[in-house]
Image 1 (tube, rainbow, N blue to C red):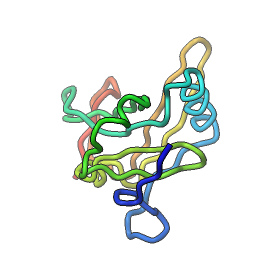
Image 2 (image 1 turned 180 degrees about the vertical axis):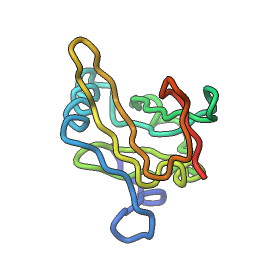
Image 3 (image 1 turned 90 degrees about the vertical axis):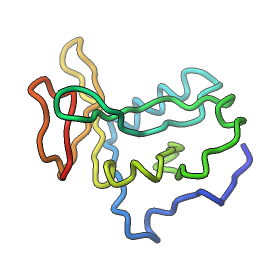
Length: 130
């Protein structure tokens, strides 16, 4: 894959506090990426949802998507061998989050923890940030 430094984000050289991903989540994300040779990374984001306002999204990025013209507003960086894409407009909502992967019996879920949450709905699907 050709590296393009135009939109590359270097977390240690900027004021953005970044994100953290637990070892369980790293293992699961890498498993999902490696489950198909066309997967190259993940896109983190938010979307309007639920009664509190927003919910987090995580989507696998395919090679075919990388071939399309890259969004100039998108930041890319590597986090422990995981290629991550984040819209610069959504960075304030994602700053400081911690992503975990939780297994509870047969239930498996990615869980997003954000210290800046103002409120979230009862079902835990949506949130708002001040």
